[in-house]
Amino acid sequence: MCRTTTPKESEELFKICKNNTIEYYDVQIEFVDHLASLIEEQWKKQPETDFETALKKLGTYNFTQIKLQKENELSKKYNRLLWKYLLDFFSWPKVIMTLAFTLVLATTFKLVKNDIWIIAPYFGYYGALTLFVGYYYFIIFPKKFKTEKVNGKKFLLLEQLKRSQSMPILMAQIPIQIPNLWNMSEITFIQNTLGIFTISLLIIFFTISMFGELFYIPEKIKEHFKEQFPEFALK
Image (cartoon, rainbow, N blue to C red; front, side, top):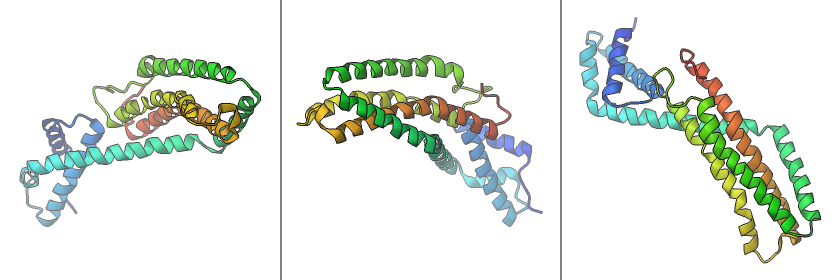
């Protein structure tokens, strides 16, 4: 029977996390699991080796390398998870809805013969949307999703979620710049059918994407967090 690390030895490995300033608990778990695997590999070859000796053989330099490796691996994993949820959000019904709203908006733009009747509501809408996104990010989100600490622990997963919530603020700025791009062309707004459809698509796409980022993704991350760390309560 292969020798494995005991709970007490695992506690010693968690102490190394503190000594190496590994602040995120999910990174600590990966770090401890990796060290335990390396120690257990030594025990397969030299079962008589005690825990302290096996630990010293790893060297403090390896601790730093393992820390950086695990942080990088988890960061990439969580980024993939965020993108997966965003793609899941854009299921076929959302795609059809996006195209339908795009056609309605493009038709409206085409029927309007005066640019001012398009530009004024356009900026009014995105001004209000930008204010809402800012209010959500700074006021609603911190109350709805506690991302700083959960039961005294910090999590890289929740930090990644918090960072991703700044994306809607940037996304809200992109459609606002569209009229500037339009003015750079020699063809006017109401003359360019392809341009009208493209800009209508961008407006609808970014609007729906923002709501996915603000509401759908946080809920999915919350579910994932509860599955991975059921011992921690995330409000």
